[in-house]
Length: 141
Image (cartoon, rainbow, N blue to C red; front, side, top):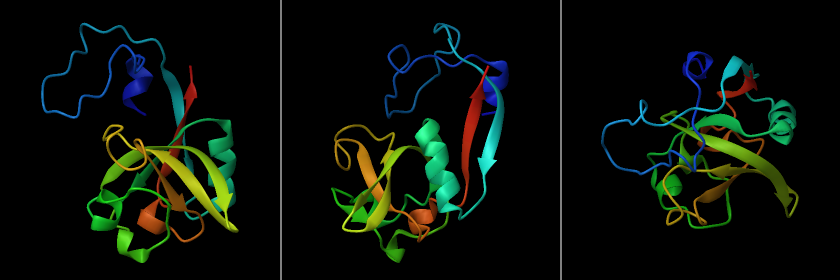
């Protein structure tokens, strides 16, 4: 978020994620949007996180080095086996409810071959995968 205060961010269509090590192309791609500030959502406040998600995509941090997360193929993650040692930032894009279980809809950066076409659902209210610890959103300049 701090980087985008001083550097315009490119559209994904102009600078897509490749999932490979390499050099950045920052000098050859024109950025189109910057932020003026970032707001952190209160940790473990499900209602505040859902309200923020309703306004737009939110950066959330999770533990992604567990078999529960890495092997996700569908359904709602609602297991403590997912862990809470934060090591991966992803984007919460929505939330929903399934059999009275609220969940966050999250887009991962590992490509459409992972998870459910690149997305996953993490149960709300249990801090599964640590998703309710560190969440931030930008104010667009």
